[in-house]
Amino acid sequence: MTLHPSAGWGALLALAGATVVLLTRQGTPAGALVGFGVALLAAAGLGVAALVPLAIFVLGSGLLTWIGRGRKTRLGMAEADRGRRGVSHVGAKLSLPALASALTLFRDAPVEALTLVYVATLAGAFADTAATELGPVLGGRAIGLRGARVVALPHGSPGGMSAGGILAAAAAAWTVALGASSVGLLDVSAAAWAAAAAGFLASLLESLSAATALGARAGHFGRNVFVSLASAGLALSARAFGWAGS
Image (tube, rainbow, N blue to C red; front, side):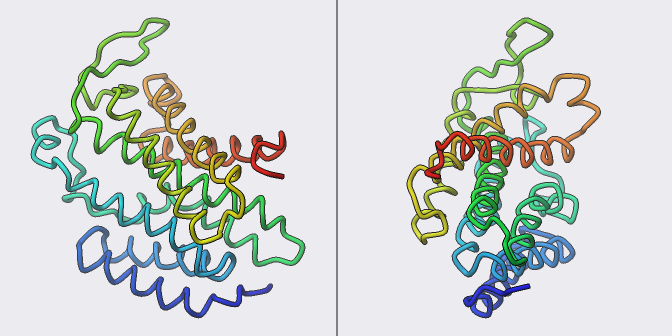
């Protein structure tokens, strides 16, 4: 196993980030501890630069949870426990980014492909969160599939999508990818576009699947895992077709 040269600085920043999450009550102590472990793996395998897209997702999700909280509460869409993320939240959203980071520690690992997966899965996680948290705030009509029909739905319904939520998802995915690109984690613009597109499309697929029998059985956290898997698969497919710059 080989640690990234900047892993030490990354560990210090990871500790600072976990402290911020606790002080701002964005996560439970256990959730913050698991998140700290994910950040350590990211810094160890990919370097301190990997903490930038991770911070955008974690801190950005906390901010979006608080925006329009009164309206979301009235609609019955506010996160439980005032939005504090626990172990199940962290595990569902960050297990695959953590795995991608861990695999980069091994000799002969396909680092570029794993880095793309890492960023794409964070882009998908943030896109999913942004759509959920900002869709009701931005308002507008929500629609979704029921069988083969497109129908109007109340905000918060499984599979419901609005123009505002879709735009928020696209912006969130691109913000994560842009952050990764700005610090050199993704070294070509095509990779950033691929990661953002993969995350955004994965969030749309999750919405389409939410109202199905399979989506209902998977539940909220299972669909979060699906977003990660779909983001990774779409990003790797883009890379295989040469759309990610290699």
